[in-house]
Picture (tube, rainbow, N blue to C red):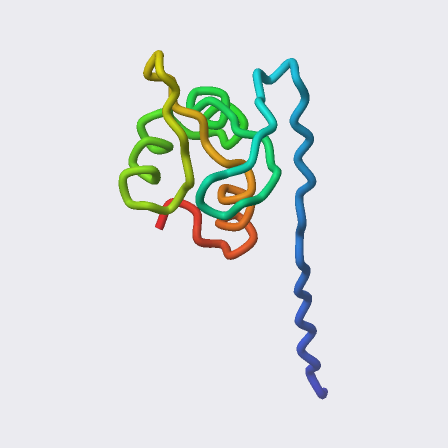
Length: 92
């Protein structure tokens, strides 16, 4: 009896929607010059199912673009986060 081997592969993509309710601020990222939402590190952690410490770790590594406001709040460029997700390079 001849056996056949079947391989199945798939690609999955996610679409993220960020609204004003997520405390996102649209501004131009000073690093990549994308007109993308800048999201607080804590809100991004919630969206990514990660801890805020993981987001700060990625910022320290230079993986994520960010800006710091005068009142010491950190906002992360959503475009840089999305790019890392698409590269499957998140948390590496």
